[in-house]
Length: 237
Ligand SMILES: [Zn+2]
Image 1 (cartoon, protein in one colour):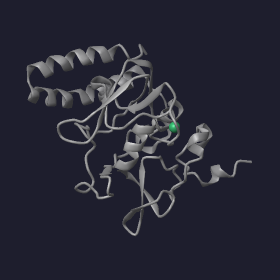
Image 2 (tube, helix red, strand yellow):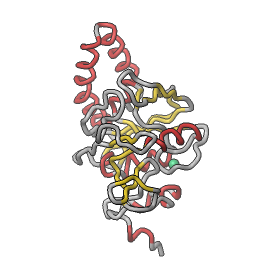
Image 3 (cartoon, helix red, strand yellow):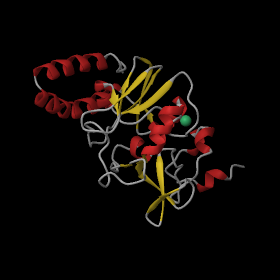
Image 4 (cartoon, protein in one colour):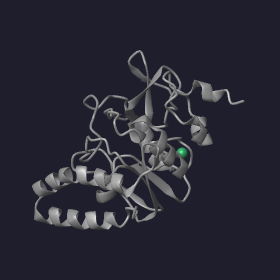
């Protein structure tokens, strides 16, 4: 008998949970607590497993450690050759994301079982970022880059052997994704249809166009090419 399942939130499909995620602590609401989350006690950041986790707050120290030691962003375990990113359709166009990679199975679980990623109607929480001293950088911060504040609908698990971190002009850290070895699409916890993927891309694309238009004609032309390249990664049906 699996006693652990009883403590998970009912909205989570614990049956499909990878062992690495099963080993994570469980939040008071019954959700596995990802590696990147900051824990708080009496309003102050504290050691993992003490106090309560705040899923909106990314700990900068963990970002640094994950990058230096090639750790999975979701479970904190060591990554292999293949790295997976759980991304929205717009990130699939720009090939840029504000969070480091995960194991493939951790990424798929995030895409299919995470309340935000798997249920397009749920609202997105803002995540904050702490500096290395534990000071919150100006309250709950936007992720680096032009994080589009819309729920992506369809979610992509982008697996690659290569990626490159870089610092955007506005501060923070972004990751540019290498050529994919596999691209999977999910919506509402199952495989996404082409129609759902296209609806997500079409609804978000004007926002990317708006940003590119401000940057000038070269950015507009580059975006058009990026879109065409991304189209090749959308399944036929
Ligand atoms: Zn993992």
